[in-house]
Length: 298
Image (tube, rainbow, N blue to C red; front, side, top):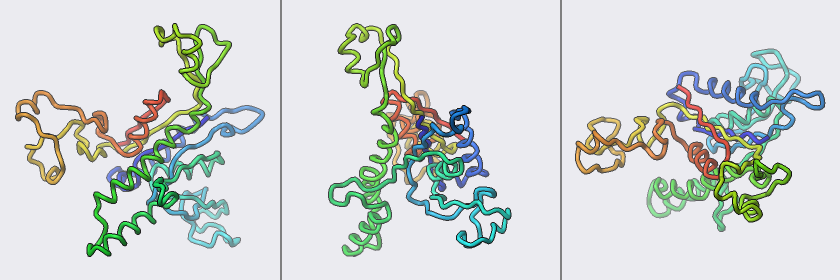
């Protein structure tokens, strides 16, 4: 069973009281929903955590018992000064939902399938986020600018780092998915096309088509985090007089009456006010017909 956990990075959780604690509690709750308790193996033996390294995270030592960074050399015999225990692990942390999920998976001993946001361009394939940022900054400094153009850099990072990584997460284990007819359960197919080729009448009865997909994706987002609608859940009309709206590119309406009477839902957050790259991943996985859930924390 693959459990993909994605969501916003730590910067978006700064406005949520005890945001990190709430997220980690929710991650543990999610994993426990799929835990199996059998005599032949442990409860988490069949679970694989799928996620991506958040580029603002960093590798550090972590005390499993008190959930803090131990203030001592982990290679020594001296116990943690906070809890007195010796159980420490090296984890990739401080980035956001992705890396907090890695911590929980490490604590519970889960298998992990991690997709870092490495560069996918043919010329710089395999470069990490920091390397591409430095390369862009170096180029623009040669041109006489203090740092790289944010729009140019942002487009590159999305198209060649984060978007390919998000697609990998959404497609994890897709090759293991099986299709079957609910009226004849004796055979299973590797693709919907193969099943419909042998049973063309199923095209007229989609309710009889079933799938076996040991995959579920959870997107955990802070409330009001959509930068496109500022958490308002609708497209912002250009004439709105608010200090926090100035400088943001907003859609033009035909007139004020049109905007007030027919507000258009935000297509990014789907009118719930919460959005990040994790939500993009959720929508991509949903297009593939996979099970997805969105959790919004206030």
